[in-house]
Each structure stands twice: as structure tokens, then as C-alpha cells.
Length: 348
Image 1 (cartoon, rainbow, N blue to C red):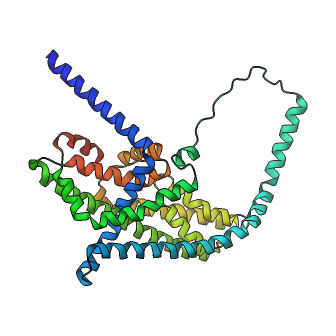
Image 2 (cartoon, rainbow, N blue to C red):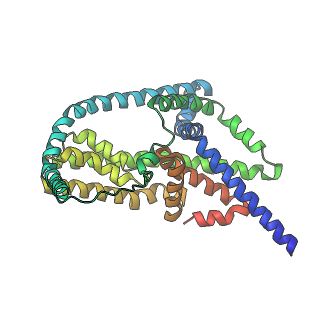
Image 3 (cartoon, rainbow, N blue to C red):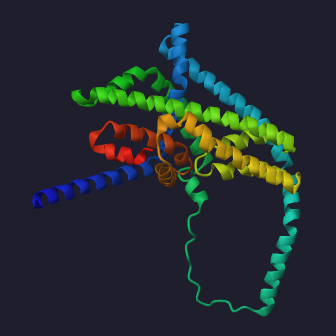
């Protein structure tokens, strides 16, 4: 009995040590792992296109992968160019909005200054012994974790197309080589697990894209009817920001409210906020379960904990990758007998 208890404690000690090493490795290797995971997601997006080029155009896989990556980069460049031109027009008008916002906040600022002068006239005693307290880390620090400079972020992002190309080119070899890493009796399970993870990631990416386009299109139409300035640009920004896990509702509400201050009546601003909230709830409770629920099968508590954990580890990048990483872990746990209780805990 004592030997069994000692063995059990030894097992848990090694498990906790392994988890701690994995967390530390993930925390300090954020730039490498985030680039790798984004490349893998991009690979699953482009793989159907590569397969079509190979079937219908009889192109070698390497050439088909190259064309697919170039087409994606051209599409992203076109979107960025169109968005940039719209954004420049919007930025040129920001001073007008900032002046109107300052004028709206002027009575509150004057009241605060008056209160401060009153306190100085009364002569409140100033504390002589001041203890320096380190400010609590806010969400801005958390979200920007791992992104020190724009140059480093762009340098890391520049590796993604190259990694995606090589992953697409060597897809079958990489999958077979990964399966061969396992003992013979577990290779079929590993092969099935990798296939399920691939289908889940494809569904996650395509589903989010379709949901973003639908929410953005509805937002553009409603913002146009409400008279929101730059509705064509603000609608798409709000729609896709709504997809950001955990912070999507707040982020989606910022662009239309910002441009609407001083331009729209109070009732219209409330209507804009109501529309953003309803669209976000519609996507969360109707679209996500219909398009992604059958693939992810994660319960809300597990998703929330995953968002908090990966957001702490990798900041904003972690919030984006938390759900696909957790979904992949659940699929792995489902096919490992000793980990099935954890899969049950993560599941619905």
C-alpha cells in the first residue's frame, strides 16, 4: 500500500513537473510557436485549393502550393490596400471627432477641475509616509505580451508564408513521418487523430470567415441606414472585431461609437450599440453552434479558461489561437485512454 501511494505521488510529481516545463516553454517561445501555429492554420486554409490545382490543372504539388500562397498574398495585399486608403480618409477626419468629443467632455472636465481647486483650498493633509506600490498589470500589457516592436512582429510574420508553403509541399510526408514516430500498435490511432484535427481546423477557419463576412455585411447595411459615417469601413471592422474571443463585443462596439459621437443623435447611438450587441449574441448563440459546434464540442467553461490561460501566455495572439489549440487537445485526449477523463471535462 505504501509502495502504491509512493508510486502515485511520484507519478503526479512528474506530471506537474512536465506541465510546468511545457507552460514555461510556451511562455518564452511565444514568437516561434505563434508563427508555427498560424502557418499550420494557413496550411489548412490553402490545402483544398492546392488539391484542386493538382486534380484539375495537373500541376505538381510544389507548383500548386506556390501559386496558392501567391494568390493568398495578392488577396491580402488588395484588402490591405483598399483598407489603407479608407483608413487614411478616416484618420484625416479623426481631429474633427476628437474636437467634438472634447467639447462634449468639457463640462465634466471643468467640474473635476473645480472639485480639485476646492480640495486644495480646504487644504487636505498630504501623507508624509508614501509607500510606492507597483501598478497592477492591465489588459494592455497582457494583450501586447511578446510583441516588443512592430519590426519584430513583421519579421516574425514574414516567416508564415514560407512555412505554409513548405507545410503544403510536404504535407503527406510530414503526416506519414509524424505517424511513424508512434509505436506500431498506435499508428492507426495517430493517423485518425491527425485527420480529425485537420478537419476541425478547416471548419474553424472557414466557419469564422463566413460568420465574419455575414456579420460584417449586416453591420454595413444597418450602419448605412442609421447614418454612421464611413459605414462601409466601420461595418467590416466591427464585424470582424466581433470574432475576437472574450473581448469581441467591446472591440466591435468601439469603431461605430467612436465615429458616431458628435455625428449621431443619442437615440441613434443607442441603436448602434443595440445592433452590435444583438449581432454578437446572434453569432455566439446561433451561428457558432451551427457552424462550429459539431467540430469543436467544447463547453463554455473550458473555452473561458482556455482564453484566460492562452491570453496570459501569449497575449492577443493567445486569444486568437486558444480555441483551435484547445479543440485539438480535446481530440488528442479522446484517443488516449489515460486522458479520456480530461476530454470528458472539456466536452459539452
